[in-house]
Length: 156
Image (tube, rainbow, N blue to C red):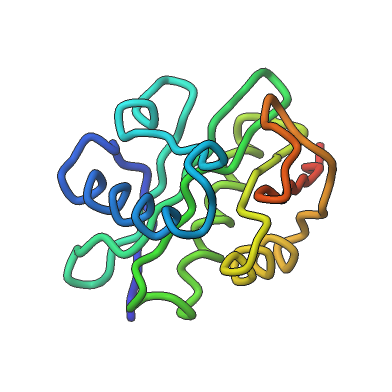
């Protein structure tokens, strides 16, 4: 599957549908109060860069976002690929695009929150393979068995 990754607005029907698919995927995995979702409107803010993966038919097959918190800290958000595209390296490519953008923005550290229970093993493997390490609670997330936190220091 040939895939392109590009920065796009989340305010388009295909991305809204992918956000809805991600939310539906997460719904049974954690209680609602431990799901920290961004809407397409929130993702369209000036502090967030959204990366979209499209296959050779221009169909959206994945997404990920970089949310800048301050001059040195960024957060990986809304990483997701459609079931048919899993295992093809799309998540890896999206994460590499996010890391590259964080470097362009001269961020020093990337953090992320992902689910901490069964069902999130592929996400953990992706982040760990990319060089993220587990850490304590980040930003204003609550400490919970439903969350797992990662960080990565970026080269200066």
